[in-house]
Figure 1 (cartoon, rainbow, N blue to C red):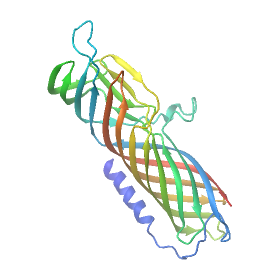
Figure 2: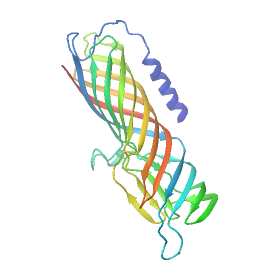
Figure 3: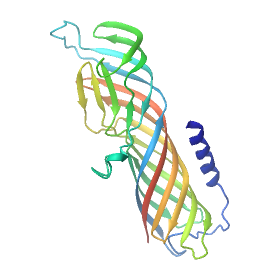
Figure 4: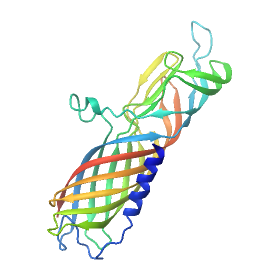
Length: 280
């Protein structure tokens, strides 16, 4: 699967650098006299994640009344694997925002380089897999631990950005014309984007039998690049299919009580959106 995905991304990357036949701004949705084009799109995604080390820390001074041990802990689980949770099966029966969705709000300048800027939001879901045997190292309730441990909610831990890992980026964009129909109602272009911004997760954590689905908050940052194809049709509409690579660093994930967690990972996304564009 990974080899296939990398091959697709490589092909899409080549497409974005195919030289156009004309250096003039002959844009698919406006005349040369136009000032630019606003657009909005909505779509959905799938992703795969790299493994990550997740660090948990709670500095509370409370003592457990039953065990007489401190409630504090500081430990790391190593090489945790995760998956996404697309939710497409329930999309037509619930809310369109339940699955892993994407929206874009952007503006193309009317210039020869065909550049633009974009607000880019990806509602992705990071779900740490249960029932993994992982190395744990650190201190838990006053006792040192350094061993392989089965990770599960029944054991002591479940961790997921299930209300969204949520990448918000400000992108710069470059579009490169590839093909045009004779009546100029159908266009195929390569599209490239690069941006950065905050991660805004709402994280579901179960730790030592205590569960918390906390508030949305800024927990770190992300950097990403996106390459793909864009099909414009009948002036006002377009489809965009892209592959995207993101580095996400979560520095301040909220855990029950005074607890915090942090980790970082790489992810590869495939994204399909349908958009509406308005020339001005």
